[in-house]
Length: 79
Image (cartoon, rainbow, N blue to C red; front, side, top):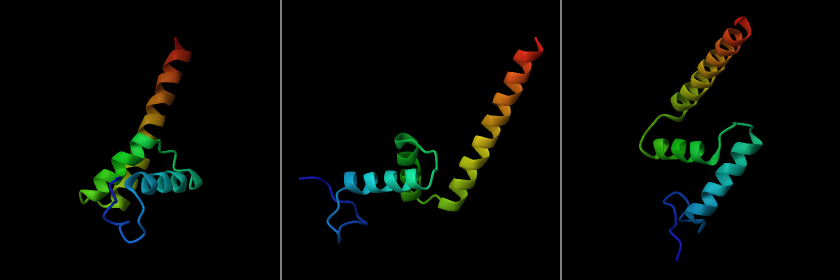
């Protein structure tokens, strides 16, 4: 018997089905989150993390990575 998630008990959805639905929504919204990252975000929210703050952190991390990659590419071209 598959485990039923707390929030989906009324609908009878399993944890796997719930996550698959979240992944589909993530893709439709072009979040760019892979399954592992989405699972980590869900777990953090379940542990009490503020979803809006988490989203802001992800956006900022992506911005920083893009800036680092741009600097790295400029350094390569300057050699």
